[in-house]
Length: 212
Image (cartoon, rainbow, N blue to C red; front, side, top):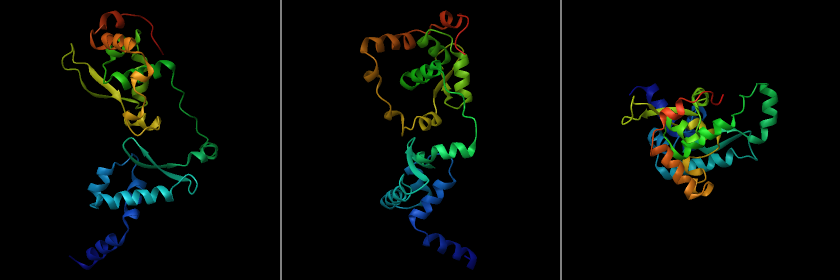
């Protein structure tokens, strides 16, 4: 090992775990999971957890314009929500158009019953939802995650994305209320029967119009 390489290795080893993890989170555009941090840093888990705790204190709502959030099963730096008004004025950017009620219905169907095909979504809602699904795919709130191999034509299966989890401010799917807490058991049974007990593709897809 030459002198320059030994010097770089020594300087890297001299960095604290907090500094190393801070650098990783700073360059990542996505939440970084604990398992990835352990794999990349080669540090013991107690040391990584202690570093994360320290970063949470350093980047708190009260102390910094940047905060460390635990979202989508990982850790990510974000701007302090208390600075939102100032940042909005600074950026002077148009916000994306708000989601429609139909879009929220599609997301809820997939969140609680998914992954689903487009036909399944149409059956669940009782109306052609293709335009809504395309919009959600464009926004990366939905994504194709596989194929329904037992179905005619092998249609794509759609599921919510990490971007949806982030937008909802949740850590993972389990952060959302259970379906049983929102809907009665009889309605749940009817909905699941409609979606999983029959395809209903022709009766739904032949309907004209639909949401926009």
